Length: 177
Image (cartoon, rainbow, N blue to C red; front, side):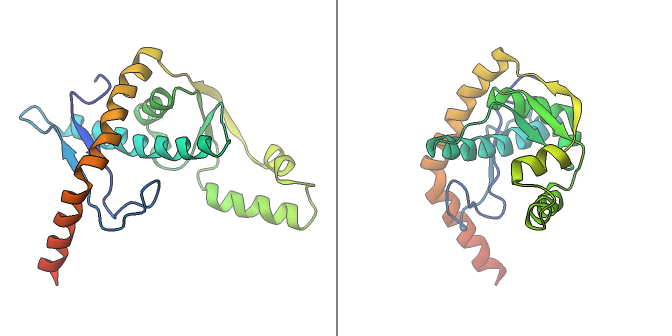
């Protein structure tokens, strides 16, 4: 399936949004639904929408002077080769996958290892404790360009639809009370 899920866009605000938009009252949505919107297209649109939201976070980091030349994937979603490729293509960066799925736990172990003196600093602890698979997922440049167009629509959609999505959320909450 080509990038953009055939014109289907997913806004992944199923529990509000925290980054980059601090808005706990917004709801998610599919845009571009039509009779051809089957489960495969909708599933891919979900992966793309979540990835666009992650890309917004990277843009925030870059605005603070933090840059990355590689993505690191872990956890359940990273098991999907399709999603890994989507991420590499959207970000335009190679992606490597950590062998440890529970990165939050590993982060705690890294902090503890530095704290107890087993390593001098976090960089050394990471070098000694984090393991990756030997392969990289390389971005497809044509897909990256196409995703760039969809990403612009994704960002514009939040701006133009936030008020309506907030009102829908509010009405739904009132009905459930």
